[in-house]
Length: 143
Image (cartoon, rainbow, N blue to C red; front, side, top):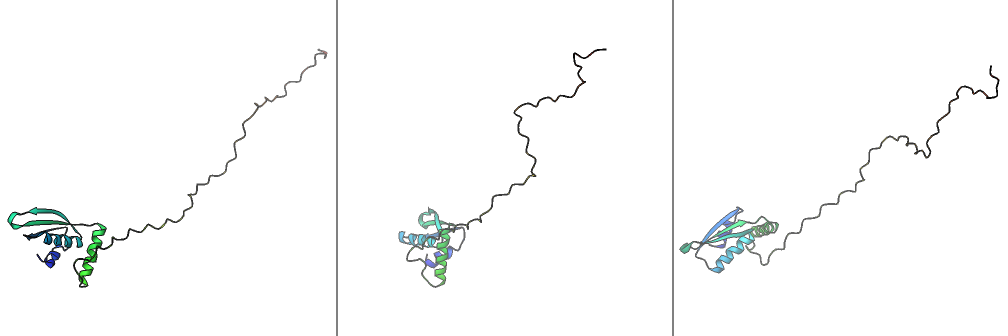
């Protein structure tokens, strides 16, 4: 299989199977490089006997693989080479979320002010004496 035939098979599907026939290790390595550049990872290699091998690839949806595939497609659309001279740098990490605005602590519901309770009594209250009948002096004449 030529590079263009291999590249055409990696069209964004989730799973790709290739049967390149009897291939050398160099040709299988080249297919592996093309798959990697287009965001795929090898899932299995099956020996078919005289027919050669079957290569099964699965799309890698990780951020680095997606970025690598985007760069490869952009390079091809500009007429550049299929494989880059060097591995592209990984995508930048996601930016930190903006800081939350400072919030005042939640206000507590205000309660109407009540009269404070009386202080505890240190001494029990004395019983009050009510005026009783007038007392009669003992040396007063009795009638």
